[in-house]
Amino acid sequence: MTTRFRNRVTELLGVEVPIVQAPMGWIARSQLASAVSNAGAMGIIETSSGELDIVRDEIRKMRDLTDKPFGVNIAQAFVRDSSIVEFVVDQGVQLVTTSAGSPTKYTGALKDAGLTVFHVVPNLVGALKAVDAGVDGLIVEGGEGGGFKSPRPVATMVLLPLVVSKVDVPVIAAGGFVDGPTMAAALALGAEGVQLGTRMVSSAESPIHDNWKQAVVSAQETDTVFLNQHTSPALRALRTDRTNALEFDTKTNAMGLFGTAMDLYFGGDMEAAIALSGQVAGRIDEVKPVADIIRECADGCLATLADLAARYQ
Ligand SMILES: Cc1cc2nc3c(=O)[nH]c(=O)nc-3n(C[C@H](O)[C@H](O)[C@H](O)COP(=O)(O)O)c2cc1C
View 1 (tube, protein in one colour):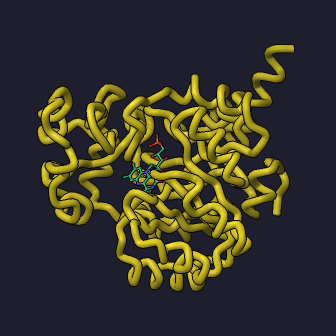
View 2 (tube, rainbow, N blue to C red):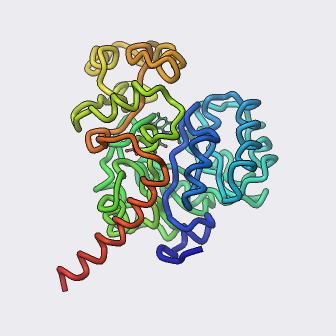
């Protein structure tokens, strides 16, 4: 294993490159996650689809596809079955990320079972609560990121250094990361790793329909909408006719109009459902293999740090 990035995140996760692929329902399965793990970063298998039998098979497939570490996510709001902890422990993975819920709920049981637990937080209060609950680390997610969000979004640029200044546990930054310079910025702000969501949705190994990937590629930075700020759960998604109509609608819960996810995810109908994606879609202009994404982030990050060190003495 190379040691170019040795820090608490690489040590805890057992990876060469401190990049975590975001968990994403139906998307974060073995095809994508094994490509990430094989590239030296951290592949994550989702459970938010709720399809636990399929997820179990996907985890089995991971063992054939990679001998590198990978983790599992529990998105608490979407997997309400409390046997999920037992399920995850039984899979024999070392890392679990928990999100979309209270860190006090599962951290104790997961830690007792010997797992490394990183909890996703959208604000400082959540971060302090997670640390109190005994997590090993935090994933600090800014409001520019794709997916389900706090209804009071805080940009990564503000949230990340704030949280880092108040906690001692290692932090992985999420929301807006896509390349070497953004990864270097995360390290400069005190993170020890980054999590990539939208960049991974639009990777070659992502199993979603090419129409979604191409919609990310053609999106501008203004082409996401933040929905449901008046209620819960808030979410950030690509601007389409469906989501555009909901952007300033404070009477409707957008979840009721989420649509038929499978027609979007695998049928490619961009109006069939809400396509969760982050603002960083505006910086993605090509579908790339995961190995290239990880290599470019890692090399570009170190090149950026070296360049800055040389320019500013
Ligand atoms: C399609 C999609 C699905 C997501 N599903 C989940 C999920 O199941 N669990 C979770 O913790 N985060 C989920 N997220 C949030 C991501 O984990 C990640 O933190 C976020 O995408 C980072 O911001 P970025 O999109 O700017 O990279 C999802 C994001 C996207 C784009």
